[in-house]
Length: 167
Image (cartoon, rainbow, N blue to C red; front, side, top):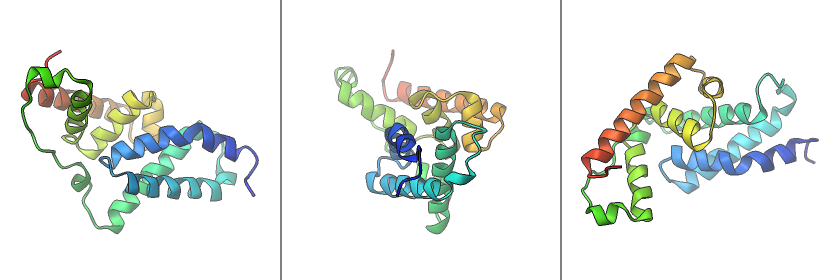
């Protein structure tokens, strides 16, 4: 039997959490679904310990990040393994301006980032999280989050320029 209010909170946060994990896992939907399911289960089992110091979604995303890192440790993969650079290729300007390829280029640009940078950029731009929320989710100081965002934007911009994408 669901705990009071938990079911509604899951409904509100399911799509954003799955989207975040899918991007964090480099598009591996099976892995991201497994980690999301694990995060929801842990949140359910520990719902009574949720104090409300932060939003439920912040607490849930923190659990999901921990689950993601647990997965890396179990597989004994270094964090960098999940964020190894993708293949760099050049596309014609006509191809770059097609919506499908633009999204692909963004995903390839994301693959150039360290996992901390990728986490920060996904939470800030795709999930509209504040610096304070990202700090709580990642357990990094806000200034460190700012540094990761700055480096991530710079790396992504350099990568996109290198493959021929200009504004």
